[in-house]
Length: 275
Image (cartoon, rainbow, N blue to C red; front, top):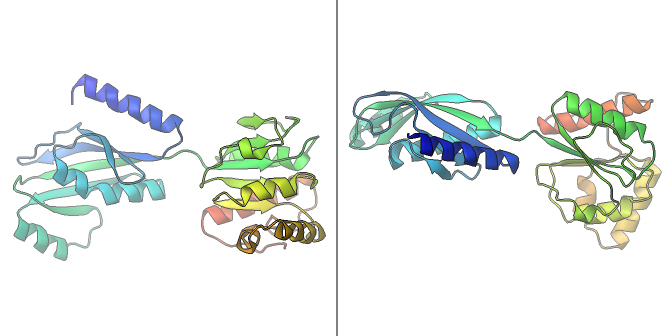
């Protein structure tokens, strides 16, 4: 690839990263035989499986590595793929025989073999903490702990008194915040803004939604939300009261219990719940 093409790829990678969009870069690292692709050829594959920029030397090898690129994005782990460019008969035979998930046999007249390194680029998981002002020790502690384990932390708090977040939004109107489907959202309030916040969130798709509150307050707030027409399936999806059952008492311990549940859900695990 020429320097201009490389610069174009780098520019697009930076744009995707700044937008928080996951993608993978597939690079030819080795070739054998008469392949059109050469070492150094690259493509960018987005999270929908589209080759958005670059070339590996033709459509055959590019289409073959899409599934592997999507798997790399999903697992957040790089991988090396061997692509065998073969005639129809050989490709079918070898595909049936091979149980190696890192080998792909492609039907083509080119011949040869390519070794392709696939590297995923995924934005950090985002934790959105909603507070209702004042000195909130749980929110501050949760912010610090979440950043320690790799979360990007955004705090919505009208007073802006929660310390250590990547971004702080000084507002009580959370409808102006751009939530993502991959967001982990936790309300750690005294209850004053819960109804309005949960009404807005009922219209969003999120990876996780937790509410820190007593059982009585949860029952009261959920009843008010039902009266407002909020769907019961949304209410049942809320982790409330949020937090793993670790016997937490202090603000720091409560923050730890909340983060433990968030991390467990992130990894598809289940912890004893204090609710």
